[in-house]
Amino acid sequence: MPSSALDRLKTLVEGARSAVAFTGAGISADSGIPTYRGNDGLWTKYDPAKYADINYFRRDPEYYWRFFQEVRYHVLSRAQPNEGHLALSTMEQRGKLTALITQNIDGLHQRAGSQRVIELHGNSRRFPCVDCGTVDTLEEVFARLDVEFPPCCTSCGGSLRPGVVFFGEMLPPGAMEESTEAASACDLFLAIGSSLVVTPASSLPVIAKEHGARLVLINNEPTALDGMADLVMREGASEVLSAMRLAQ
Ligand code: APR
Ligand code: ZN
Image (cartoon, rainbow, N blue to C red; front, side):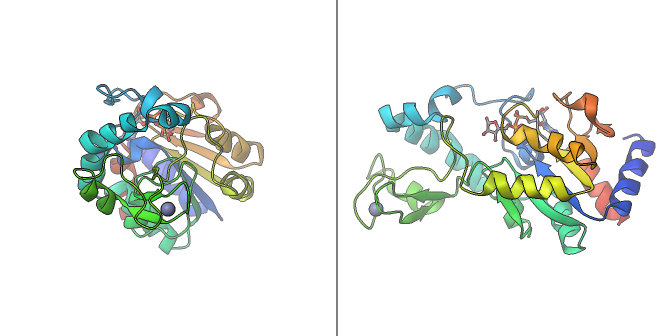
């Protein structure tokens, strides 16, 4: 990693009054969770246009539950927070990070100790009942799949769904408003491990920039917003963030 880029990042972080981190699938890649569009985008056997779409889920919920039983559960249950997650948690503890906005649904930021996490796309460790709202956990649901497929609510017998935002759905109430407020008020916006192509999340770095913040992009491939960034680091998220953490 060029020391000049890392030095520039450290200077920007040290000089920031209020920094916001915005993360995508790339920060969890080192935890063994494949990204969606990066060169390791591995969700091949199952089609995201089906398992991640609300209309398809309503038509054929069993497709999602097969994907969950064969792929997603095993990836999520094995995943542990990595150096990138831990570095952002340390930044928050040191009062350097006013908000952590994530597109990820793996819950790894919270498991790394981050407190103020805004989950734009929900959390795939929670399974609410569509009828009564009772929430089951990842482990509870998986344990029942062999005898109950698709799984039903233990309180009312209704249908369960993953606590994530499917394509075709609105974001959780307030998530975008809270994120927009944080992006507008910060003076440093760190976009980490995201291709920055999915709206409305990808408008947040633009909002930060428009409100005078410095924009840093840490991603191992080009992103849609490279041209407007103050610093682009074409590096691994864990490497950059752990180097920055050690320097603080
Ligand atoms: N370090 C840094 N960047 C990485 C790493 C890494 N170790 N590994 C992969 N990347 C980069 C990839 O090159 C890619 O550009 O992370 C980016 C991840 O981009 P996407 O796969 O598009 O994921 P993301 O931007 O989070 O997608 C946003 O799209 O499918 C929906 O709801 C889903 O939340 C997701 C949203
Ligand atoms: Zn129920």
